[in-house]
Length: 347
Ligand SMILES: NC(=O)c1ccc[n+]([C@@H]2O[C@H](COP(=O)([O-])OP(=O)(O)OC[C@H]3O[C@@H](n4cnc5c(N)ncnc54)[C@H](O)[C@@H]3O)[C@@H](O)[C@H]2O)c1
Image (cartoon, rainbow, N blue to C red; front, side):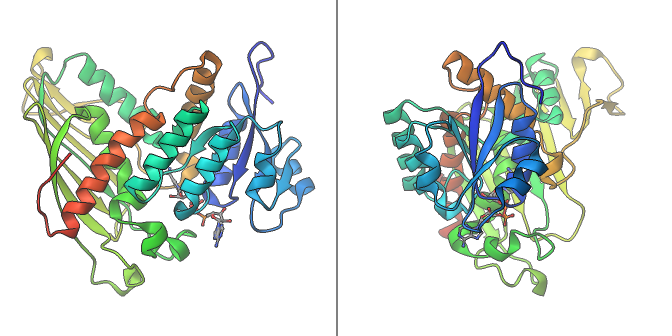
């Protein structure tokens, strides 16, 4: 246990015990203040086995309401099916628990609004798992922008290429519209969120088109598993984000930013300010987001930032409910545009 005895402790109850949950538990337990002390799953779990596996006492629950009634729980960590996120988050807020919420926040604007209202009405804070914002890749990219090395951005694209086929456990529920939602909601949201982190959230309108692969591997999907969204920002800049979950290739998070002083392509850049040779890229040393494996995702840095913000009674940086909702507003507008065959939707 790495707990710092001088700061507050947060007992966390995790809802769901699938792939994301196991990564969350290790990451929460590695923070200074957080410790998972309860797990709630509709499958009966063995408390002694979980306690031994995760290195500390863990109570198990089969009903969310029973776990929420436990006054020892400070934070609820929601990792279950997306169609259950709204009801679980609203119940957690009413029980005065702070909330860690896996993406998508929920699969409709109405559900996201209910979560926001419940959190505000009950004075609880939220952390949405857009953990890519805490990745070394996007932290370094943002620092480069903040240093002004690319000048004023007028174009940016961040794309998500990750084939989510039967080789993933979540395939069994993710193929349904009810839980999977859309190419953006199920996974492409990470790339669109990164684009908005880099270019700002002031989006005027979006246009999106969607399609799906002809491969039988992806036939079970009830929704289009490839989409491309063009964003028109209020400051005149334009952006693009592709969400491709039916590709057959290595995981690739593609980033290309173009500004008045230079460009960045993934881990390469050119800046006129440095007077380097424009005929060749300069290289940035950074850990790239090159895997869909949750054990590689920067959850620990995100959860540490959440607990540090809770210590101060503040909203967390980068992935609070308020910040994440801005990205979901753009996603819902993009999916509305795609459903209408690419009609522009104003935010
Ligand atoms: N942020 C990320 O990078 C990332 C990565 C993977 C998953 N996720 C998100 O985490 C969440 C869970 O995904 P996962 O990959 O762990 O999926 P999983 O299939 O491994 O686990 C899903 C969870 O839902 C529960 N569940 C399954 N069927 C159920 C049912 N019928 N009724 C009630 N509960 C049921 C399972 O017990 C499990 O806890 C989703 O919201 C997903 O989008 C996020």
